[in-house]
Length: 387
Figure 1 (tube, rainbow, N blue to C red):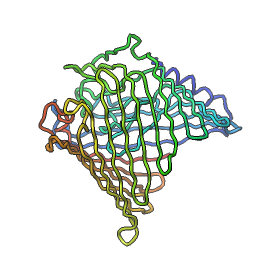
Figure 2: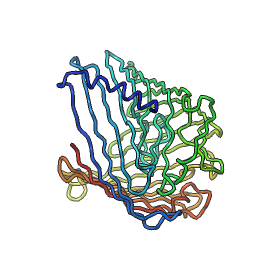
Figure 3: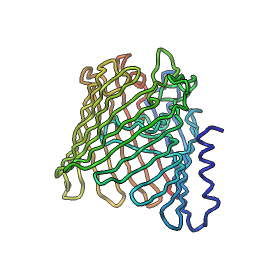
Figure 4: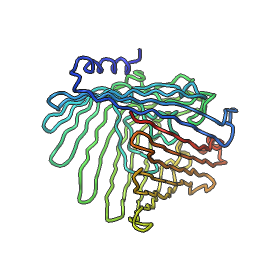
């Protein structure tokens, strides 16, 4: 049994020894269909069907200052054996007292404010078989302390175990097919048991929400050295995230300085301007623009080294919560390199919702990180039932 599953089983014991009135149970069952425009580079099918379930058990003490959340996840996929997988997203025991909050178990922590990418978000590993944008994360074993100070909030983290990134199988699509079949290599002799530490301080300065963060441990982003075997180096990262609202303008930015096998500085920043009450005062239309920079220039192993993101967000403000977002990122050094995405969502009822997502990739440069995705344009439709 893997360490994080053993930890989850141990932490779940309060669920079976606590009064029944303290429980809440809910969850989500999702039916997903992906349709690709072309067969894959290894001849993979154009149709991909999957079903995912993510229940959640919540327990709270009679005093109300201690709680436990248990949220496992499982997906069955018709195409990809690696995408048929399970994870414990959360098995987190939390205790509140005066000006502090103690957390122990497996959890998901999100840092970041920008739309096109999240540079400062380094606590959790990416579940890359779930989504191409890196937004879905694996549960991270942690001990965390949150302190409410007079000037702001300070969060401290000890992360005793590292999670390897998930990758598609050779029969799957997206997320470097086949990389999950190779044994991972580590810079540290402790491998996945190297203890990571992190901290974030958040405060308000006039209209600005400001976050300062630091992380030292195993780099969540693997290196690949002419092989499909991922190499996880150690790294230290210092990060800054800021955002502020001025009328209809939302300004936001993230910046990092990272020291690893190669050191780099990266920045993403821009704005969202919202026209409130268009279409006879009913809907809102937002214009987004962000600039993405990485000091490694064209040698950067990631997209966004000198790129511009622009998009439109249309919020209908209807009973069903319907929203649309269309946006694209273009490389300013090579305008033939670009990605375009469409996101839309809404509800059929209180218990049923829908999402439709589309991605288009274009690049003719073999050194471009999105080159391997150029045959993977796809549309993804989901219907979810909440129970």
